[in-house]
Length: 153
Image (cartoon, rainbow, N blue to C red; front, side, top):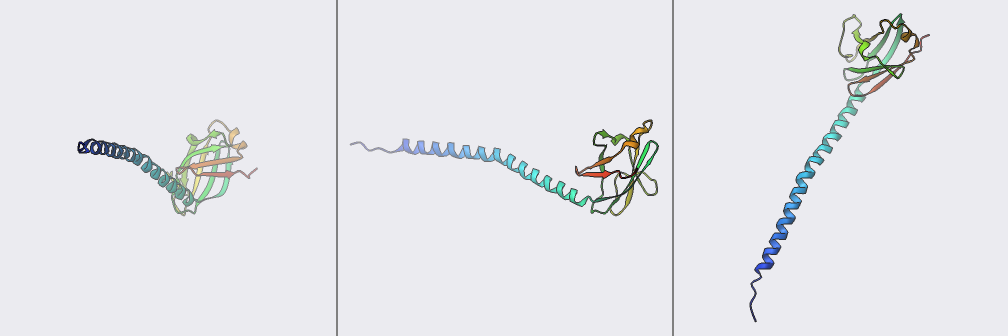
C-alpha cells in the first residue's frame, strides 16, 4: 500500500477558497457603489422633502393691469423660496416674463422668510393673456408646485 500525501486535495481546496473569496470581493466592490448611490438618493429625497415642507407661501391678492399680472404672496415658511418656473393656465410657460419684487419695488431673486413679495408677470404685446388667467402654478427650486387661483373678475 502506498502512502498518499494529500497535496492535490489541499491545493484544490485552496483554489476553491481563493476563487470564492475573490468572487465575493468583486461582488462587494460592485455592490458598494450601488448601495452608496441608493443611500445618496434617499438622502437627496429626504432633503428635497424637507425643503418642500419648509416652503410655505400664502397667496394674498392678484391684480390685472392691461398686459401685466401682479400677484402678492407671503413667505411664512422656514426657507427662502426661489421660483424656477411659472405656468399660466397650466400650459403657458411664463418664466421669461417673470420678475420678482419686494414691496419697495426692488428686484429680488427669492422670497425671504417672513416677507411679502410681488410676482410680476409682464405679457408685453399680448393683453389677452391677463384677461384669461385662471390659474398660475409656481414651481420652486425644490420642485414644489404652488397653485394660485385667480378669483378676480
